Image 1 (tube, protein in one colour):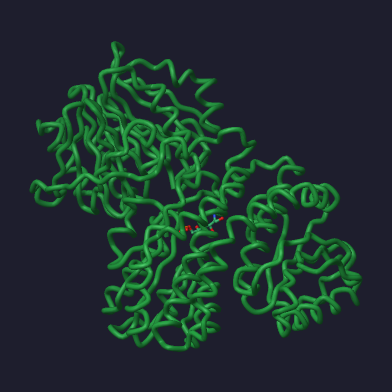
Image 2: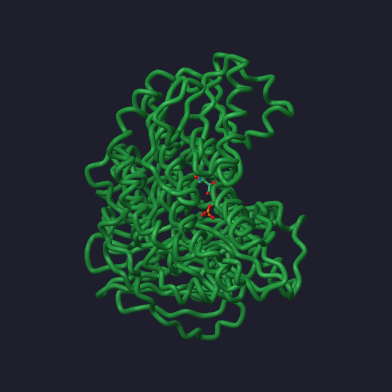
Length: 602
Ligand code: AGP
């Protein structure tokens, strides 16, 4: 949460700072600001609202200076106000700071600084950093020393960047339990919360580890340990994502673009080398116990993995929601934990991995964002290479993860000798999935838009499936509630009659994820849940392969495919329904209220 950017260059940087925080807006978007150094000293321009709005109102892009920092905020400490927006200045205006994370001892530090005469202008925990640096600098410590000493006083988590009026053309930055990465350009350097901060300007990145700080300038960078100030050797990495991939192109919203990109994203998931899948499958086959972890969408992806492993490889491998994994998980050296994460930075999932590691468990991860914390902390990593996912709502990343899990489960089944031809059949079926998704997008878009137009006034939605469709039903409901702000519940159809049926009436649309008839048992179970809904006059919207069925009030027709691939088509249908409903309702599609894409705090 919160997006940090810093640029040091030969040219004016304000415009790039603003474009960069706009690209990081999925991390937070309640207020934003920039700080640059120019003839008037350190100049901070900031305000409440999304980046484009604040930039226009406060003239962010016309701030002068060839180096600077910027921030887009997701409020934790202190309400959404201009005063609480970052950057924050020290009393003497010599130091400007941006921060992501939570300084847990900020009350004590604030009291101490107030006693020493500092004046605070905001309610944030961040502001203590600027005053602390100023305080230490006043005692005649050089800027870098003051910065490091201040960092050593901080408890909690931080990614921070600072500029000082007395040391132009330098940015000092540091990380501890919050993400930060450097970008190395030609006679310019960048720092950002993730690689999207600088992707259009450089694809060479340097990862910072927890407990490290860096000094960046036009001439390059140096990294040291906060505790000892020892130099840390760093290797630059090349980011494979194309700079254009973060652009909205001709689409109305990133969510629309990312849904429509899925055929391509599936192809890229299929290009992940088989040796990587096989290595993970080998380790999982050898482990006594496998556990999936993820949270939000990735918990549902994890659950999808649980169903796959049970069905294809005959193995019980539970999926845990990362936020509860600390309580539920039993971690020991016989266990392998597979974490799933788009950002690779989600606090809950990182914590689950760390608990697992501490208990001696093996760790692995499927991650989208290169250079993210999880790619370094998990022992074995599969990078899904889905490209930047900008919309706060995850669509294409989840799709790629599900494709990878199908490949993984098929390989585990093969290694365990319980394959019965599934692996080769699935590989062939996955090959045609991109065309099927394309066909679905082309043929059902208008139909789904029409449903959204007719049903957007309904306040409460249910998404129902059986078997492997259950996690897809959960995920479909999450899409609907995140982007439309309507109540939506995903449920296994069988669960319905154990209480929730009391809510069904003509005002509750129930979206049924109907399997193909080939999947006879699941099909029949789904139809029996549907009968229960119809008996209570609930509206049935079926995503189905049937030609049509009198039990359906409405139908979205999916292109014919096999049982294991089919749920992915249902997912695309549900993503589109959520998207189109949000558009009809006039919601802030890419940045729904109160949400942030990368939840990096507890
Ligand atoms: C997805 O639509 C959500 N915004 C959210 O549930 C997300 O999936 C979750 O926070 C996990 O994020 P991650 O994949 O980056 O770890």
